Amino acid sequence: MPAEIVTAVHGTFGEILQGYTFGAHGFEHFLFTAPIEELKSQARLCPQEGTGKKRLGITPDDRVKALSAFELLSAELGHGAPDCTIEIDSNIPVAKGYASSTADILATAQLCIRSLHPQTPEPVVRALALSVARKLEYGDYLLHPGVAACAQRTHRLLHAYRTDLRWTIVGIDEGGWVRTEEFHQERPDDPGKARVYAQLFAQLDTALRADDYAAAAEVASRSAELHNDRLPKKSLEDLRRIQQDLGALGVCVAHSGTLAGLIFSRHQPDHDLRVRECRAQLSACGYSSETFTLKEAQR
Image 1: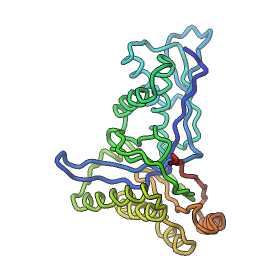
Image 2: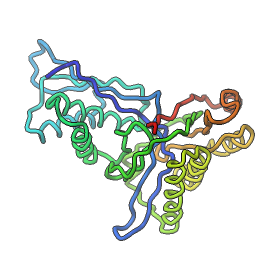
Image 3: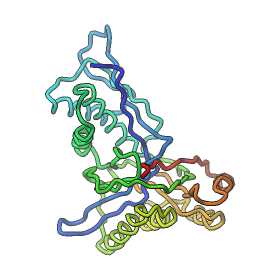
Image 4: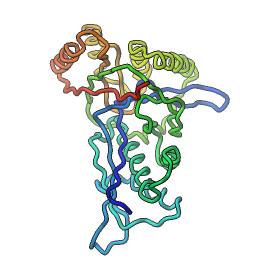
């Protein structure tokens, strides 16, 4: 197997909108991704030369879902486990809401296909990677280089957007972690909320198609508010106050994580000043912040 193949998948800053609708098949969960330029997971294969071992390994050794993805896909493609180590190089923090696990799984699944069958067309690579990812966890659709709407429980792509929002997210981590698998086992679905989420889905779809960066951020804020009874963000009151003070466009959160942040756009006058003031005010409130750039597929 060629060791020089490297595959990469981006992380996210939570979700722009996450919720569910209700129809003929019951509750159907969806989300709109918030992909981030600065975060990614890379996977590569390294031969285990001279070790005498005939087994597949992975490093870091806690990335067990990514290892399972490679093993499952390799078996489905009719191959045994290679005498290699999968090396994952990721700057995505774990169990926070950055989609670290999904990024690892999808990067590793693509690595398996590219290593075994290098000439596989890209649409087939994506379909095979998703087929194994949905067996391992709920997750985001991360194979589009921009915002995507997807069916959360199956990774199925609903729509891939090409946008010009130019968002900057000034984000904080409230601390601790959320075990996503356990969190999603709870099903407090509400038909009343489902109707609201259906409206928000339509509003966000319209905003993204029109590059309405302000309207899209307003939907993100509404999603954060609706979800706050399920996974409260203790910073939400401070974020709302700073939003009003500095003209931030909205609030973005990880709906199954510890992240929350304020949305600005480079379309706004004095964008850089607003972001600096935001970070200063967050620091004064005792929060450590980072800035993230929304990853967008251009028109």
